[in-house]
Image (tube, rainbow, N blue to C red; front, side, top):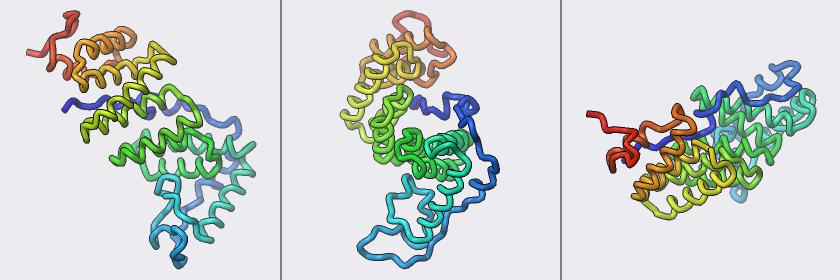
Length: 258
């Protein structure tokens, strides 16, 4: 199976370039000191509480569990601290999602999950919260959950990179279950991305991969060359090797290794 080209935001963007709020915490310990509550409240049958001892802050969107009184109290204190340190909750949410991307880029998934959840708590219209949680779900091989989260993010913000990231998840699903519908979804998303930005190298590379997996080899080569001409450094070696394994380069630019 051809290695998949990962195009997730954390792997293609310098995390230091993310925008941060104009007003950051006057005392960062106010928020960094928050530790999710390990609650022992008795579960109620008709409410969906998390299992005893589970940390809901390490589930996407808090696992959509009913929060206990202690967890609600924690949230209240956290929101109060943010209200004191940020202009508004939207700004605070952007701050925590930016930190979450940084942690995710460093491979600290649990810390990133916690920060993305806090961003969601502050503003459930922050597309980055769903996007980032979707990336973590993907990395944890929970592809259906990743698709649901990223789609929710797209409903909020029609973002080019998010569109390409979501196509990546669908392509991965196809390599796992060989369901043609996944490849069709990926193609639709990548067509949309290239309509928005024809010179998107990531979209061209992913479309090349999708075409390759669909045995449209000539079209796959064409899309690969388009991406390579735009940005040789961002061309996927794995996709190139997959193409060469199927057919010699029609343009004669690339050759198989001896």
